[in-house]
Image 1 (cartoon, rainbow, N blue to C red):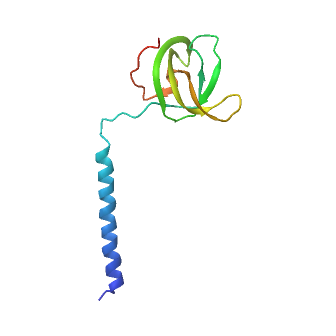
Image 2: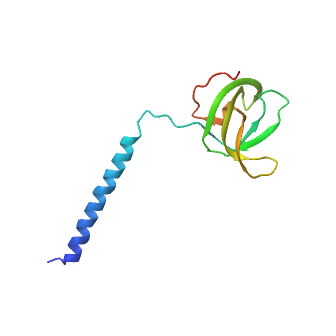
Image 3: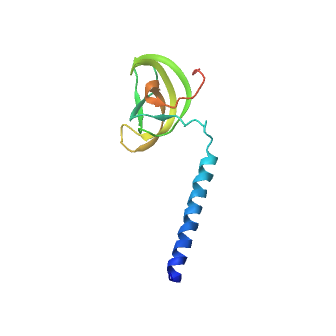
Length: 121
């Protein structure tokens, strides 16, 4: 005959397993299968004040960080494209090296999970 402690441990193990499976199902159901991921940078990305030459560096956006795409503009060729997005996201100040919220134009090939935005005015 098994001890009462062994039976209790097995019962609690089954309860924990069922609870964990329920939590996974709840999280899976909360995320629609067709939901698109938010736009983000694919590497450390320089942000500029303009998509046209000459450009001034206004900051850098960390790689893999989500960004807010505001609009697009065609400009100088970089990274195989002349399309630039005006984005906002977490990054750094290029002059101090300190973290900063960066707003500027980045090459379109540096943004993954792109969404549809209007042309910049």
